Length: 390
Image: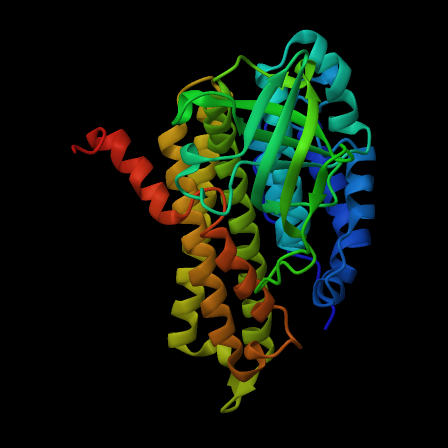
């Protein structure tokens, strides 16, 4: 079944420019994304052509400086664009979030010369990025990563394996965290690695429960030689750069989660209003009406939470705790709402004839990526009560 275009959300946007931007996003969704989302997800088609169009339209660099080809939009606007894209197809919305994450290190910590040399192509030149932190034995405990970068004159030689890399094997560039010093977070450095670097290869994509159109793969670095000019920040600063990127990236995941939840609610509501049992629409029955009310309330609460965190970021205030809260609450909301949407549709909800089963499968991964929700609870608790005592 072809997915319906998502129902427009009444958004409070700060400027006329941002309202025009959202109108452009909705036009692209209706024309290029929604009509093919279900079919392409089922077949596992990666929509590189959509990302090229988004880049050409200025939508891959929204939160970054216009000096380097970005849209210079506040996070409050950027995240609502992500939500709309994810509501239409999570592969696209999450892909834009990952690309933004991959640009974050260079934009925030690169030298002026590095930004001028690389950011224009990354933000609006058709390139697609990926972010390489996790490893087979270093997921939640990212500070224990083992991929090494060894200095060799004016170059670094990178060896090791990265895991669970969204856009692995198809990205044009990778932001890579590698160990250049001793154990722990202070021994990690960030690098900008071209996707066609000699010695860099990707394993076969993982066979996933959902998001089948988005390739997730291990990356193998077999003596990949990277000039020191592609080192981001100072030696040993990589983990700080990674954590800053993840704070922003968690807001992206939160926005995508609310998009998935909103799409599921739209489908459930349309079905409930059109499905007749016992002589009247099932939307007339109180038990189901209460389910829909709870779904809508959770979505509104999640949207308010991620926007509040975004406004803190836009104001230059600390937002790490709120980002963790938004990621936790919004992704749990997506899982709960999509599960309820399947229930509203009954047997039809369990079939691929309707998109809610796909939305439910996709919601699950959002509770895992960019820090599991158990890790988010640890982050929040540390902000509230301080580090754990040993």
